[in-house]
Figure 1 (cartoon, rainbow, N blue to C red):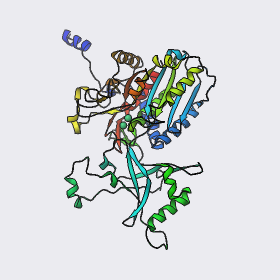
Figure 2 (figure 1 turned 45 degrees about the vertical axis):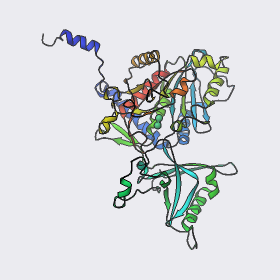
Figure 3 (figure 1 turned 180 degrees about the vertical axis):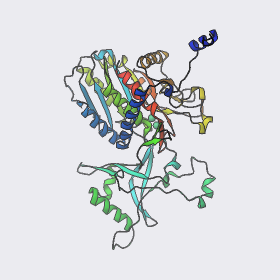
Figure 4 (figure 1 turned 90 degrees about the horizontal axis):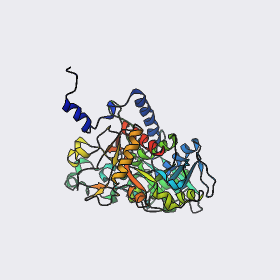
Length: 467
Ligand code: MN
Ligand code: MN
């Protein structure tokens, strides 16, 4: 009799919401699938350190799954898989469903750009017998985090004749790396008195790229000449070619397991490639699809989603309109019946910095994918604020698919804030809600996520695409 629950215990079980740690809920088979998924994810992180590399890698994986480039006017039937690259910097993929496009599409939207140090148009100079490259930071970085870490140079140079040179310095065994050495503590007395946000002058984020003069040369700029000579021999470029280039310094290390129990993943660019990979794999693996599934991997989120490859670009509407035309459906009818999971990361509760979180409403590690009803800052400024109806809909979808999820806010009210592409999808008259993986050290060169949350983000995208 003592094992029988008392009345109040039965009522408590029925009424209270208990946020369980996902490790108490997953069986061995699910845990094995999680590990295998995370191995693929880490490989994706290593292959895709810029938006261009993410597009290339996603296309390679999509082609292996039977996706073909979409041509305007193409006749499509249920089950067909197509993609359109937007200038190599953003990617849209679709799997045509049974239902007509007038019933809307199921969208997964993530971004593939991450904070980094871009080279300035006139980057190369010599000072103190070093050759250096000047940078202009991209996205919301904490500048001190980019000092004294190994960096690689990734990107493209477009020559005057229109030919493209792919640059990837670092990443291969034996490759050199670049660095911006920090100030030694012995001479940092004055700098250490400054506020953290201003202690590092962004004009001093200059990459050391060489120190050896061109053999036998005389006069000034002998190291600069030697570096340009190296670049010319390897890539066929001259100093002028920097003017039509996109070259970015990104962290030189590969993704790895974190923790003695290997329960976490550490690496660069997890915001938001953790959700981009989840959306991509979810699209590949979805079964029983009724509606057309669309995945968009957007560029420029970290600087406001403007521009031709950002989520505000008409490129997305053009792609959906093209699909709609094939079925004689209007774009506006399709969009008003569509649903979008805006897949972006949120902040994970960090006990080292507990004061900035409302623990009751924060994302805790291993609770699964984190839904965010709203983002923004202050009084929800800049948020699309998903309706209660949309929250109710997604609860049902995720529960039915057995996905572990929770609801989270970024941090305490008025402490800060952030945005995602959600508002730009909602502005298109698409019901949208944010959902993603919670991250420790977001925007740092080394971000940390929980494997269980990464896996559940994938499962949530798959569930959305299976509607
Ligand atoms: Mn993001
Ligand atoms: Mn971000």
